[in-house]
Length: 234
Image (cartoon, rainbow, N blue to C red; front, side):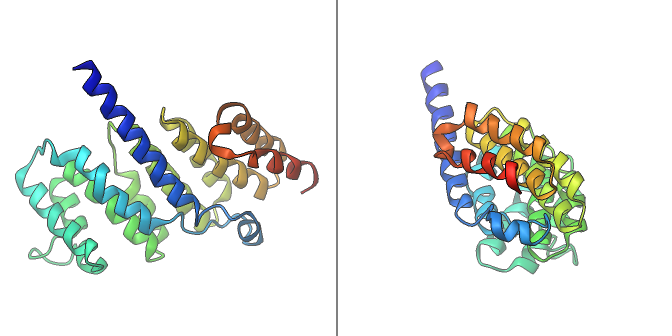
């Protein structure tokens, strides 16, 4: 039984790393980021939604649904999202199509309901409705620490786009420490460092990049050294 548990954890870790590697291809462009005065771009929400609908959603509630109706409602919304029908997936406008919004409102205490709030928040972010996205994400809770870290990271992006850069930095810092997963912690430590650099909080930025240099060299490929140099001159 222990071996099976270890194998499961190793697989989950690998999938997390693969997900974030894909995410990094489009995220954290320092020049674009600084030009926009700490207003972050999307962190790859298309990829994020796919990831949530895949392994994370499966692990969170499909293996052990607490509420059959909530699960059915969620799966209909998931199907619409997978087909690119974001408005139908979001739902909330009719009883016939509850979508993620309706599923959360009706079954908010279930895992399916909570995950619906999370997915609805990501869709609202993609639509540019940053306050709505933040409020929905804030309602999500989970025992999965990686999902919680993703929640805080997405909330940080919402705050950045609401021109609340200091709050965004605090939220990114929270995301960096929310999970024991090394790559998740690395990714959001880097995001916090870039936010701090954009805010000209160079001492804080140096702290974040030094942490990467110390703990996450396997993922960073020496990029933290360049960022540390930037703290001296930017």
